[in-house]
Length: 389
Image 1 (cartoon, rainbow, N blue to C red):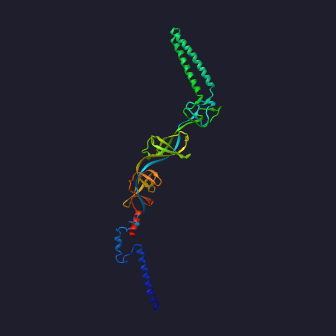
Image 2 (cartoon, helix red, strand yellow):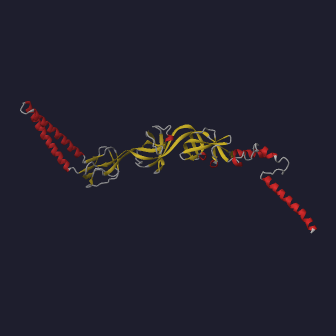
């Protein structure tokens, strides 16, 4: 028994030493060495390290809670001379366009045009039944002739004082009334013929001889497409420099290898409050008539060149209807509202809120907030390489 106790005592001491050594190792790895353990001076080093600068290539000062500052990628905003190119989608409209209709209910008696025919102003297109109107016209003409004769006789008799002044005036009034009735009959006769109000191309015929047409019934369409009105919308923030006379280029999917040049005719006087855009109208010459009313066209409009501040699209942080960027100054990210302008693939113009040469965050915006300390990934790599050399 005594010999067994003699053997267990050294073994217990060995186990205790091993456990104590393991505890010291673990606590040193965690940076929390208990008082009285570790090498000499270990207690004084943590306090001195609180204000120490980070070693090159190592994480920067810890954020709140002891965590290192977020790592971000940044670039410098740059200034470029750009020709502001506005791209938009537009609709072609005829220079003049009308639905050809009748004024009164009547029967079609003759059609004087073919589908798609080019006509001139005043050309006869359709005749309607005019039998009753011609009869009314004949009656009105006869009544006027009779009243004119009576009026002339009364004038002679009045000079001889054989009729009274009142009788003379009654006959004069009757004559003028018949003149008005004749004019009305002639107007009704004119309503039985439908003529082209302007030169252009008629569309498809929608009635036949014998059809009963009513007011508003479309007989055909008439379009003057010698010049095309091109209407398109642009955002209000692109209005600067937009004026009548600027040249633009339009293309149609129907003619992919062809471009149509025109000029801005006018800019609408109002901005749509819902879309914050304004309607622009341009005029495109169309001598061969290939462009049709209602066509879809893409528009490219180049404004005057100007200096612009450019940043990558990744730098934008959208929130509701506003845009922000994180500007890094002295290793601190500051959130700043900006106004954007023209977009190009991969880049965006900053109209207001940022100057050229300021450093903006392009990666890591989701993990930072306004006023937080950050580490620039590019600078961290440069510091690490410098430390290795």
